[in-house]
Length: 294
Image 1 (cartoon, rainbow, N blue to C red):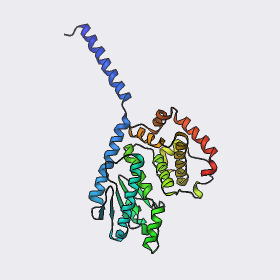
Image 2: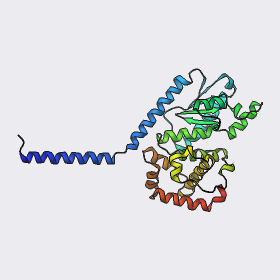
Image 3: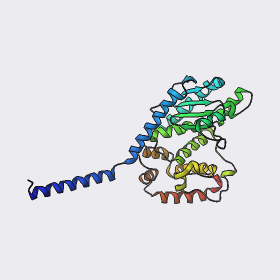
Image 4: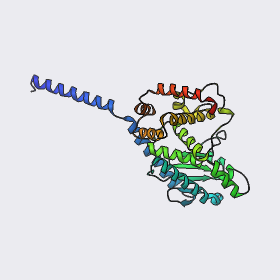
């Protein structure tokens, strides 16, 4: 039979253990668990793509990148591989990071086949998409339909989507899949602007009546009604970060995200401000620089 003192001791011990468990749960970084899960799913899908989906394609194996293609695009296969290796080298040097998985670049003969692979309709005529360590591209021939191969290659090299999509690959692997959609699009567009001197400007993202809130950008980026404006605004936030916090700011943010922090926590850790203050600072900055971007 337990004495009263023993019972009290057991009760106190149980309470202490309960408090420790509760404290551990409160302090535990559940985002890291989600991060591991996202990485595992991505790697599984990447292996499935390589071993099942594209096994009947022709392949070129490069130093860091592999290219899968059909007979129709054999004439572009080495060109795309060279372009991909060049893009990979630029980003590896910039971020001082080598991903632990090789990217696979897949050339689809037509927009229709590319969109079918994504389950998209023709309203979303993407020329390049990044998913699970795989970069899907529409054939340069369909992207720029002229008869002279060298002309196609020249224009594609300077204006094509490959560097944009390779940027997504690096962001994904640096952060272990932990990033807001708007932020990876900001970085990919920054790369296009700096490396290729191109940016998305059309009537959809000029002279907007209002900008999207950070909450809207974060929760529903790819489903926002005005995609042109959403992308344009993401780019301006990326530029704002560099102008206010310096050229290394994105590397610092990526490292924060890699540790499992949310973007909000990363901002607080690096700049000592809340996301509300950060958004307010961005709004003040964009109002002063409105004519440059909108």
